[in-house]
Length: 621
Image (tube, rainbow, N blue to C red):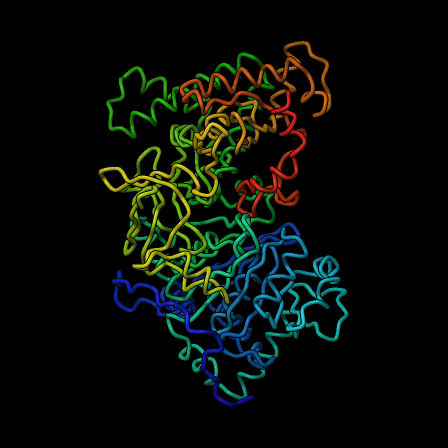
């Protein structure tokens, strides 16, 4: 066990990312160095905070590093060497971060897996990555996956964050792994430094599998340098401080939250892990974060809930709420455009703030400085509503392949309808067909074991093809117009971008989700999942005796209401873009149901297949 670590690479030579200009001296070369620098600069007693048995507990910076180094030694003791793979499938927790950090200290490539993935997808990822060590949450996770494990021949050990009731020869607890590492530390005190020093900036740090909306998942190879460039450059224009308190909500298996976690730790913040999605409202009140990273769907649901609460209170309160929202949107729009705010508008906004907007801020704990959103498009409507309410939202854009941030709004550069400007060291350009192409130190090394796919993803001069359609304004702000692969063509030969139209339709309080269809059809149509809570309130006021989602979706008055909403919200579209027919769907589209990716993007192919009969009826009538 005392031999020096082997440092030879076991993978084919990946492409080299573009070099970057450092922002400050002594930048960390690797993620392990990031953790060590965080301890040196910000040795705090509450680096990681989590809730268990009704109480908040904390892990200090020193304990975080000690445990991560012992996990690294433990992995080495189990026989893992540089570039070997360890997968992690668990909800967000300090253990997730510690397991990740342990891999980075050991030079082991970790493979995060979404907890919501189907068993067959988990098996594919474990086998394609040739994972040797599998970090799991608990016995319940094992029970769910046990039937696929015999089909994963490279697996050697299972490591459980909570090993209660687990009885397998190939299993050990995280605590046992740490003890194994602590024992190795006594035998070979210099091992951990040798492991850290043998890792290079361009070595693969993590292998993240894309959601596979258009075929089998591809393993995105991100290097230490890829991720570090994003952690440092994306945060350049934010005034982060050690007093900031983030709440971790999005899954750490997604690179957006993962990079955010590194940013929190590197800047010496007190990270708090949400107990679960259902507990987020409670945790927001308890933690009172100063910053919050989320996806647009979270903000849409917060607004929908506030709107529903007002509607259920009384018609008068609903009218007051709507009035306040309109005042706030106008205030935010004028502020955005640097237009003067009249005295009377300022008075109206102050009144709206006291009676409505203060409650928005209270939902987030009352001391939020800003929110950061990504992963999907944020509508202008939601942006204006929240900014008008004093909840500042900064929107960014990126992909797993770009670690992830390409552009970002920030306190200095922000513009309505855009996703900000390229971050430091990143260049973007628009191809002849409108596709956004990007070059920078954040761009992946390539797709794991897929040289052809890697080659196809890049232009001859080395720019990454994002697959998104966009445009740059004269000041360098980027506007995303659609996904290149999501554009569809009607039978009349007209191309339609579905996302902007869907955003328009979602402006209705009666619409929860919408998917535009119509590829190779005569006209576009829409599948709509109504907001049944809003419809119940509508039905009550209209004297309609409707109870179940099926009854709502089948009732002619409800269908006509949604048709009117769609027509009004899309009245400015070109004739060929207008939605001619709609179908109401009873069940919400979910990750578990297969219609959404883990970052809540629509899987259009799956929706087309699942609702084929419904779609066919729209065009048969």
